[in-house]
Length: 453
Image (tube, rainbow, N blue to C red; front, side, top):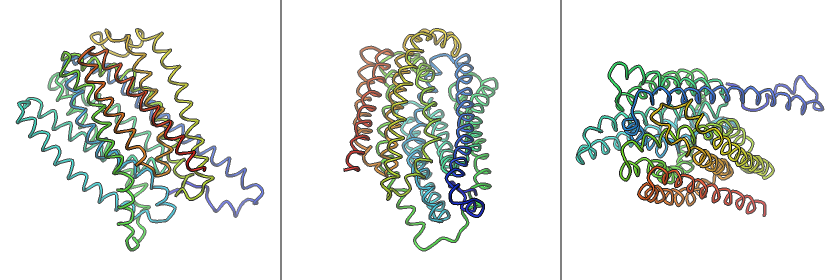
């Protein structure tokens, strides 16, 4: 496998005087190629999501689209609160494992933790389905079971993707991002024509697409990564990596449960306090207004995060740490500027955007689009600021802002749905994003002051 660093063999071909110029040219070429493939992946994913929303909203009425959205919150719990934290640890420690030539132990530790998570996910799936049946929601048990299966499969995909992503296999990552987005709606639409326009049919299509992507990801992983991680495993190497991955990931899992609850509470609050169709209308508004700016931030994070982790190394060099911190602060500022521009654009063109992207039944909420764009941008700024703490392995520092703003967001969603319905939940989403961004940006800058003193 190609190293993430400039090849040492160039020393045999160039003089020391010209080494810096060669390194710069090499890094610029590689960075340009990586950014291109990340862009391809994100553009294909966004286009797939946009076309998917258009097609599925044409086939499903708002009530059934709302049922699908509620089911996806169950899948999101598995992927975000259970599997997502391990993916964060995988990304963070791939470069140190490669640098220390302990990739075999690192990969085995991932398999061990992944097996434990799989058993936990199956147990939770059984409890969710059994509880739903006992509470009289038997008609939704099948949807919930498929949602848990989707979350488990997406978790495997996310872990493999995190390894490829950390290894800077940008073309592979881009291919699977685009493939997943297009396959989801294509398989779902095909199933709708076979079995009818029901929420469980769409969820089944999503599961089928996820299995296809997982199979493809594993083939690339086996070819590009697994074959390179066949070094002999040293004594205590696996246990050491298991402890590191767990120590890094468990705080993310703790606050991940709260952030999942905040994300899911908007739809569930509307389900309880609004009308059935409000969930579907809100979900479309979220997908058109919140999702695109989050995807744009994902483009930047996917490109810069493994580079920042590699530059920071094990955080023993203060100069390297300061450089990564400055870059992260610049990204936050850029996100805030883009948020202002996106909000203005949504204010001017919200009617045209909804006419183009969603079915006729969903266009009555177009005027709320600028608020959702602003909320997505503010949350993105907070996520970029959190890179500073994650790079310095201070995931514990994120527990307080993640948990308390999530609780604040849940309360806002309940109050907003109760008093103002759909519009109240949109306002709650905006206030939550603002509180999260302010707290994490402050914390990231305060962290920097403490380190430099």
